[in-house]
Length: 262
Image 1: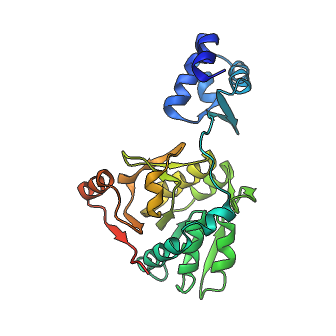
Image 2: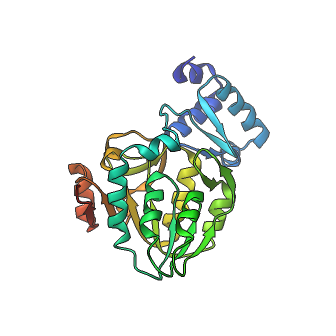
Image 3: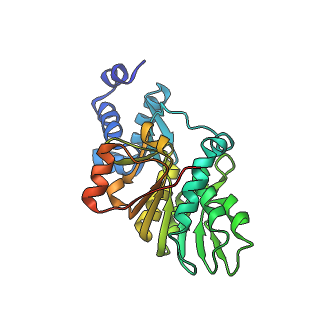
């Protein structure tokens, strides 16, 4: 049964839940209960039916859309466009001074950034990127705070509510993030709710936000909204962004740094 047919067959409240999730993405169960003025148990019953029919997907603490996108495994993504990621990372590292404090998100591009920062001195790094810890540890004067939370072996990171709460305790000079894709209107997307939540926490608590993505990310669809490209401080990529994105960045005075080719 597809989403439209299920919504039509469901109760008016369930149909509204489908519509709300389609518009907003992930919504906590408690928020839905308050919105409809019913108990959380009632909402869970509605959500269980919608998820059983394949219309929505349960996440920890709430409900979200069913993903139509399959994000590649970490190991596979690590070798995809590896040379471009290394060049982007090297360029970004040039814009991070010694003795800075920074948040470092997880992902294959951020793993390349960690390697590029390994020769910096005196950095204070708050990260949920497990692989980055080993990469950065030998650096001179490096202090690393590994974000607590649920460990995701697939993504080699920590995530969840504990992770976002940990990040919220700090303010850093720089927030270094990547993302799954950038929409034509400048919306930043991730493929999972957990990745989007930690990225949002980083952008909210950093004085400057550096977005590092290879140009292929401009051609992909995402699922969970992270924010908007107008909210970053600088873009680091390997090719000029599409005209619509370039116009947004130009109007906001946001610099675009293009990594040189081989």
